[in-house]
Image (cartoon, rainbow, N blue to C red):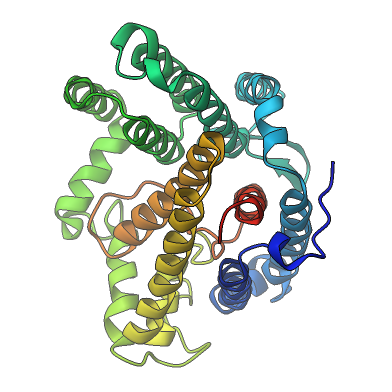
Length: 370
């Protein structure tokens, strides 16, 4: 099942692999810089988050290399079983006693310190299944009943299960990624117009049905209305970014990580990076993600196999959508959603599944014309 990578023509995309390695290194460094104060206070060990992130990064990197060696066609062969497994995990996490509640969301399955987040598996699993479906039945995608609607029902079934946790951020990434895949496959614009109207109504219902989401919208519009409550995170995030200026305060010199910005090693790690490394550091990081986007699209466009093309585009879309949402939240462009920054934010399931995803992308690059 494993490919021989000794030949020059069978090597993975070197630039993409380099960018991923750089992002991982930056992520590990920033997790320590952002977390050591809180880590020392909470656990009596300033290296607590660093050691765990190093473990996650190490396991994830090995998993990425392993996935890079598995022919991408394998995922098409087992796409039905992968999706079924993901749905089973999403159902299990909702069962009391099995699913673990953190921060008001029942999104994890595990024992003690070891846990996984099934919604992260579903993002990749649905991309794989949809890529397989579109590659086989792309000619039906212009038909609402034969192509568009069945795909849509599958996407929103997964979204509905994720919202029962609830986890709007992950659900939003999943839906947007899959919609982009349908658009690339050639779905009619008129279908998307109808979907957009339904989406707006549904999104309004989701906001109205949960008071905390309304509070987040209000805090987004005017965080100073409740500076010590719902507006606290975004205010502290902007307080971090502002003083960073052009060059930043210097590595390790963030002030906001001293119990101002809550758990800065996760969703708001970009704010600490911008505070310490400034505008130049923030732009440099964004440029790395642009290179990842460029190489991913190039790999997809130069792949002869339609499944490889859809799979590569789906993986790249998932990562870039997550980056855009996270950074937009941190700089105050959209309300807080609870989305991590790929490769940088602290977390096991997110980082490991992200690296597995790019492992698949690297394998596709082996078989492309690059």
